[in-house]
Image (tube, rainbow, N blue to C red):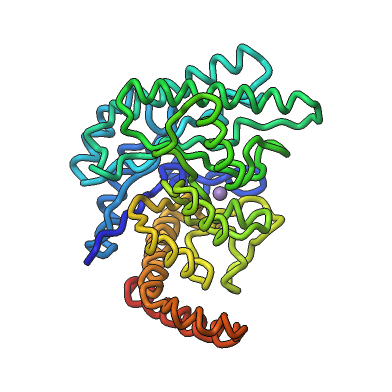
Length: 373
Ligand SMILES: [Mn+2]
């Protein structure tokens, strides 16, 4: 059976969100009791044994809270012991910089945020032993720290700062090995009402401009599209995928969902970022087909949150269910007959196509059940 690569996020395993919901509903995952080494052990003990053997597991980490200079050696050792790879690393700049980060108009914040990015590259290369050959990790730039809230013409200047800083970061990485992929993870908002590079299309354009203005090579640059982020503002994550493929910028994916589109769990456009697990629905089966035909065989990430009422056991279950849900979509996607669909669509028989998709959907729920039992 061909291998399938899934990555699990350290930040899923938290004691509770806090704010409007309990902050300590999963007490054994508090910062004092549960670190990244414990997280990797938990994957080895409680998650990997529940998955089919063709699934390879990677992890996703934020510098400097989930991985840092102090913890890196111990984390790499335990990853090796458990056959777990580094799939994604990202500077958690949003935890430190609230005034634009590397795009900031405050020169001091901008300088510190730039240094923080370079340190993240350094940590990534300290983890080379847990890179998987040809599935080297993606260095993700989430736009959360590039936020602003006042209307001024200098938003343009922030964008220029951003391009200059990311160009420097890419040059630094190139000099230090050039093994990493780079992806922007666009999101329309969160933490700030507006953020630079809010959509997949803006991120594609960003890299094209970085190539034109700074000569940055874009072969290994692309997008980490999170399905839920496109869904948050009512955009179509299928078309986002089409654009990524057309521009050869599909390097990583966050396949977790904003909900609503399976008719079972609530969520959907216009809500805060909900981070449900990957869902089984017709749209995701279609995306699975698109990426299969493109030959995408890199990591599929599950940037999910436990529900505010989940205990530890139920939170772990959600990760397993998310991975198996996507596997079910991938399985049935192989059965999509494009010629048959085109035959119907050329005659405007979308009703026939709808019924074909319904059959695939029913089958994928059954496959999920058999994988999960
Ligand atoms: Mn999200």
